[in-house]
Length: 183
Image (tube, rainbow, N blue to C red; front, side, top):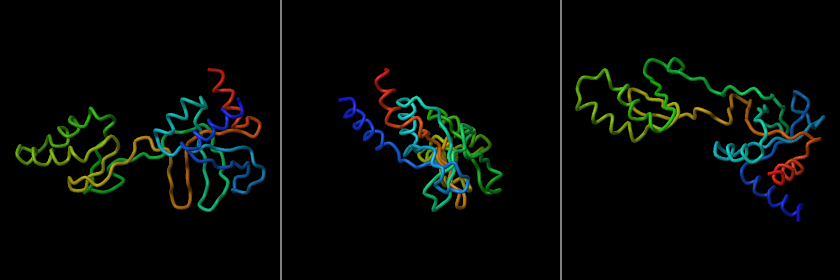
């Protein structure tokens, strides 16, 4: 019964993320394989897995075409640090940390405009577009919203992801059974 439960749990967890083998080499070669890494599909999956597994989050790095990844460790300070200077004079960034801040962000953004009719029209349109995150505007028009806490980042051929590491000594299936039945 315990083994059947473990297989069911493994199947459920597999829906929330993908697995990537981890190498001890820094060049992506498979030897020595030191464990597996569970990469969550999205932020919600990450939170669910963290609550269930109780593991500390770690970061991996791999290049396009690598079957294996290298473990980067526990350091995670966020993959992106963006401000308006990264774009140019015609771009603006509105940082919104939770949905309650949208109205105050709009008030701050339009504070310098004296024509209140212009503000009313523009603010109504902008309010529909703004989301929690780093909102990028070009000449006052919404362009995109970047996640404040991304779970992955890619630059050129380098890929970085956060997730959960399981060493070969600490078998993934054993960890699931142990954690689930000790609650």
